[in-house]
Length: 267
Image 1 (cartoon, one colour):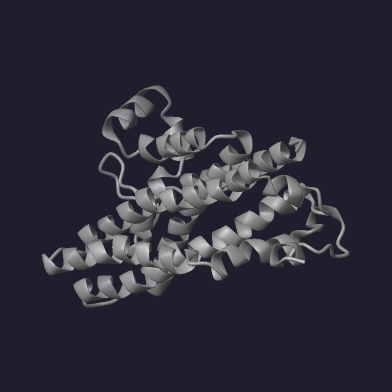
Image 2 (cartoon, one colour):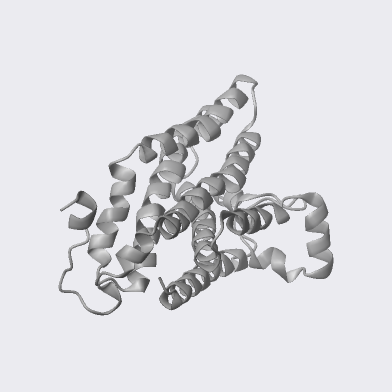
């Protein structure tokens, strides 16, 4: 019996949790038993902390350093989440692994949940906690007095909520489409529609409610308004929590749609 097969031996669990433990072990192994974890950590450190280190050498101030962190984390880190999510679903569908796995005693909701948990934890460590902890001391070197821990934890929480949004979005798209093009294309469109000036102007004019209903305000300064994460980092009160609530609700909707689509998939 292969390692892959032995990780999917049926356990006496009924309902939506049927097969979850086995599938979660298999998904976690894709991080812990491969090069993915240290490759992701290395890329995040170079992209986020490396660029901040270069800013420090130029005598940059605190807000510029925070802005750099938010741009890298808010616009480029989601690309890692999208790549991992689409490979997790589409890679298995194209190789026939998904059909084999789902022929076992495995609830299809557990199939989606296991990917969310394993990949969500991997991204949390590699793209939020590790670079965020190092960035805290980089910020302290600029400010001399460290940022308040409570505010900084909130800052990282919004960073992760933004990342998790794109993880769930890509999983949903990978469940809906059979090709990588729509997954990458739609996800990238969502990432950049808010921050890009010409698309922001169109959205603000024709569908202004979308600005608060999407995760853009969590990490990116829009229309010269500071992001919610930057306000938490410096200890300022939040003017609104609507983008936080809306983003969390989107994540739930994406998971529900992905689970519904997988449950109707015929292999």
